[in-house]
Image (cartoon, rainbow, N blue to C red; front, side):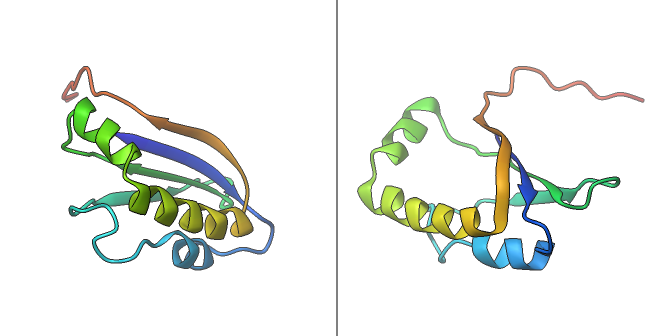
Length: 101
C-alpha cells in the first residue's frame, strides 16, 4: 500500500493537483488504481492511496528502474509546484484486515 497526504498551495484546486499528479500511460508498467480523498474540514488536504499487488522484491527492482526513476522525478517536480508540503509519504506492507460490522 502506498499512502501520501499532501497540502495544496492556497488557491490550487484538486483538478489542478490531479493534472500535475497524473502519470504517462504505462508509467508503472502495470495498472495502478489510486484513490484520492479530500479532507471534509480542510479542502487543501488531499490523501492518496494505492493498493499494490507487488512483492518487496518487485518494488525494490522498480526503485532501480532508471526510466521509472526519471519519470517519477519529473512527475514529482510538477506535483511540488502545486503542493505546499507532503505530510505523510510511505510504502506500507498490509499486515491486517478487519471487517467491522
